[in-house]
Image (tube, rainbow, N blue to C red; front, top):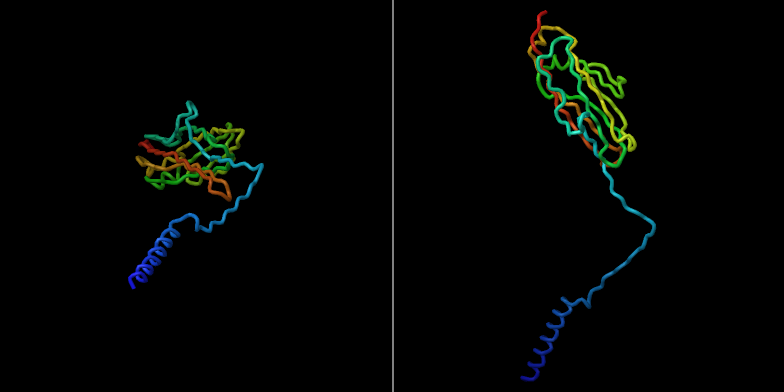
Length: 193
C-alpha cells in the first residue's frame, strides 16, 4: 500500500514538474515568423520651417511696429525677411488680428505691403489677407510694411491699437505646418485740429 501511494505521489510530482517546465520552456512556443524583402527603396525625413527675421541682420524678429505719438498723416515703415529654414517649399498667408486697444483706431489705420518694391496689398489694416509662395530656390522673401494714420478725427487721440501679423504656412493633405506672429502696438498722440 505504501508503494502504491509513493508511486502515485511520484507520478503527480513528475506531472507537476513537467507542467512547470512546459510553461516556462521555449521549446513549446508556436511562433510564426515571416520576412519580406524590398529593394531600391529609400526613406527620408524633411522639414517645413518659416522664420521671421530682421532684414538688416537676420536676427529673429518677434516685435514689429512699436509706435508712440502717431499723428494724422504720420506713418511708420518696417520690414521682415521671411525665410524658408526647412527643406520644403510652401505657400504662406499673412493675416492680422487685433489683440487689444481701440477698435476704432485699428479700423482706421491703413497698411501697404510691398514685395520687391511693388505693392501687393493696400487697404485697411484689419482687412489684410495675403497668400504667397516661398520656394526652395528663393529661400527668403523680404516684405516692407507701411502703416499710416489717415484721419485727424479727435476721437482717435491718445488711443492704442495692439495687433499681430500672423505668418502661416502649411502643406495641403499632410500635417506639415508652421506659424509665426509679430506683435505690434500703435499709439496716437495729440494734435491740433
